[in-house]
Structure formats: structure tokens, C-alpha cells
Length: 468
Image (cartoon, rainbow, N blue to C red):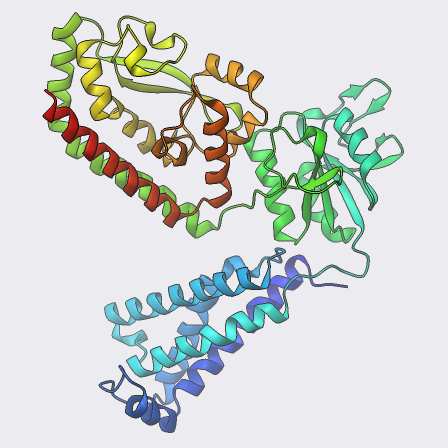
């Protein structure tokens, strides 16, 4: 039986600790220290220092602890390709090396000699990826065991008809407790049956079910999941190396592969690494905070200009769609007459409702300043699909296939669609860019998008000032 769950975590974590200890011991050998600092370019100036006694034990313990801590995401038996394993392992080893160097800089007690640190990181850079490639998750002896996860009887019917694997049962969210669909019960107390398929309990038991039944595939059959339910189920699947699939006919709101002739298609939305989440949120807070400080001197002038222009309100609030169809209130400096911001979207040059000040605010993007507050409190992100007005969302969803696939990430101030000038007036193009962003999203991809957006803003400001 393959390693799953906690067995995989224990084995992978123990291997990392052992490899870290061995790397320090090898790097600490006097002969290797001398050869390294004598013959390896760029490191000739390093002093060969071999630790002994308590200093060596502390170095081993600290290195093992830091390395294991930085590699924690790899302790989950997720189904990854070999190159993906190597890339993630290399990134984490470099993070561990940076932490060790920083720790030694601030506290000499835990300092690894520079030559030892460099050699240790170099050894781990090779050994750690090899270790995770060797123990990488692979299908067990019976790779055709599946569990249905969801609450929609119609979708469950379709999934069961299309499923090749042996379906061991289903789990459902707690909110459907006691709900019935015709003659089919969807109770979550473990006593019900659905069309002859065993009820294995509520969604909170998915982790236990995957381990107990050696599940290889999860067949998602949600009607309208909230973000916590969907990503909770998806994250549990990835923790155990379980493939998540949906029925092709019911994949309109799920980011799926869509290729081939199979009725069941793979869900391609992988949960973000914890460090990526932290980095993105930290970037959002830093960007919004710095942006608000820089913009503060201009806010009073903008407010005064809006008041003098037509005497109306300074800010305009509108309900927009967020992740999984939730809504939030977004604010902008008012750029149109009265409440006409809610009219059908059109190009600025064709819009007769935009005020004189509003034209200038839009061209310089200064009307977006209040959205920095939405980013700061977590309603939005700096980068993501553009938040759409809720009434407009209904219309776009009706005329554009797969529109709801944009709901998997927070709406953003800028994004791939925004920097390519794709707006709601061309929903198909906007959707293509938004889905491409969701598939490619990463912290570094966000930085590239922000850089391009800042450049576009700078150009627009210069052009606007020249044309005054």
C-alpha cells in the first residue's frame, strides 16, 4: 500500500532531518573544507572552520529544524510531476539557506561557518529533490477507487454514470443534513444511502475516508459550494495525492482541463503554497499601505475638484462580485453624473455621463485610489480578475460560457485582462485573460503584471498632462 497521509509526512520529514544532519557532517569535514575554500572559485576567501563538540551538535539540530520547517509543504503527498518536485524543493532549500544565514547573522550561537553553510546548502540542493522524487506519490495497488464529494443529486447521478472507478461512497457538506431529492436521501449522518451508494459522512470526514478506503479519485458534485467547502475538499485531495474530477457537463464553474473525450475531467486548480499566500497578502498590504500614504496629499484636491465640478458626492459605492459569488462594496472617486455609474458599460469616449473631472480622473487612474482601502482590508487583491458589478455579472454569466471560473481568486485592482485592455465590453476576451491568470498565478507573475500596470499608468498620466 502506498504511503499516504501521516505515514508520508513522517517518512518524508524524517528523511529531510536525516539528510540535513548528514549534509552538515559532510560539510564540516576538515579536508573538504580545505579543498572547497582552496579550489572552488568565488569561495577562495572563506576560512575553513570545522566545528566540534557542542557547536557541531547545535549546528546539526538548527539546520535540521530550519530545513524541515521550510520544506513542510513537501511533506504532503500531492501528485506532482518530477520537474515540479525538483523546482519546489530547490526553492525551499534556498529559503532554508537564507534563514540559516539570517539566524547566524543575528545570533552567533546558532551560526554555521560560511564555508559549512554554503556546502550544506549545496549538498541539500542535490539530495532533497532526489529524496522527494524517490518517495513521490504514485497510485496504489488499486488506483480505481473513488469517492463522490458534493450535494447535488443531478450532478451525482451524472458522475456515477460516467465513473469508471469503483465508487466506495459519497460525503456531503453539513448544510444538506436531512435534505431529500425526490426519493434520494442526502443525509450526512452516515446512515443514508444514495442510489445504492454508501453515505460515508459529512465533508469534515473526507480526510478519514480517503485514508480508510485508499481513495485515488474524488468526484466533485457541488451545486453551489462556498469557498471554504470547495477549497477545503480540494486541499484535502491534494494533501493525499487524490485526483479531483468533475463531470464535463457540470464544469461551467470549475477550472478544469476540458481536453479529451472523457466525460470526467480533471480539476486544474491547485491550492496555493502557504508561503505564496503569505507573500501575496504581504504584498497586497504593503502596496495598499504605501499607495494610500503617497496618495494622501492628492485626496483633498481630488475631493475638492469633484465638489466644485457638479456639487455631487465625492465617493461612489457599488456592490461587486467577489470569490465564489460573494459580494462586497467597492468605492471609487465619482467620475459620472449622479447614479449613472450603474448604466450599461461602454467605452469612456462614448459615455455622455462622465463629468469633466471624471474624464481626467479616469485617464490618470486616480479614481481607483479608494480601492486601495479594499485591498488593505482584504476584500480585494492588487492582482486578480476585475471585480464586476453584480447586475452586470448576471448578464455576462448569461452570454459568456464559463464566466464563473473567474470566481476562484480574489478580484484585483489590476490583472492580466486589465493590462491587455480587455474589459466587460468584450467579455470573451476578458474571460480568456482572467482564466489564463488563474492558471499561471504566482507571486512573480503578479509582480510582472503590477510593473506593466504602473508603466501604463505613468504613460497615461504623462499623456493627460501634455494634452491639457
